[in-house]
Image (cartoon, rainbow, N blue to C red):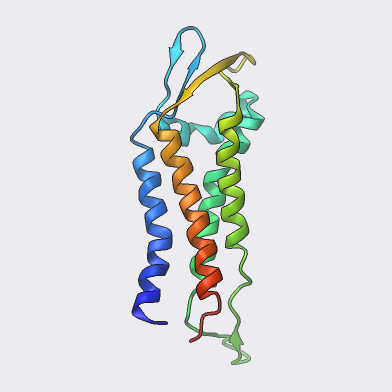
Length: 165
C-alpha cells in the first residue's frame, strides 16, 4: 500500500468524523411542544440511545445510524488493512474480512436522511408528539458526515478495492 493510499484511507474515516464532531456543536432541529424547543445535537447524541425506554422506537432507530456508522468505520479499516496476519498454530494467512462497510455506511446514511421526512417527533414520555418546524445546522452536518462516509467508503472500495500487501 502506497503512502497516498494510506492517507486516502485515513481521510475516508477522519473527514466524516470531523463533520460529525462539528455537528455536535450545533442545534439539531426545532419542534413545537409547549413552546418552541431546540435541542442540541450533543444532547440528542447522548440521550438518543435511551429513547426506546420512553416509547420512542422510531426515534431510537434513527439514533442507531450513529453506531452503524461507527461499525462501518471499524469494518472499513479492518477490510482495507494491508498487513497479512498469520494464524499462530497453523501458520497460514488469515484473509481480510469480506467488505460490508459499504452496505453499513449506506444504511447509516439512509437512516439519517429518512429523518428529514418526519413531521412529528416524540416530545414527552407520555406519548405526546411535537411538530417538527425545521432542521438546523447540527442535523445537516450530521447527515453530511454520514453521507460523506458512505460516498467515500464506496468510492474507495470501487477504485482501490483489492488491497495488495
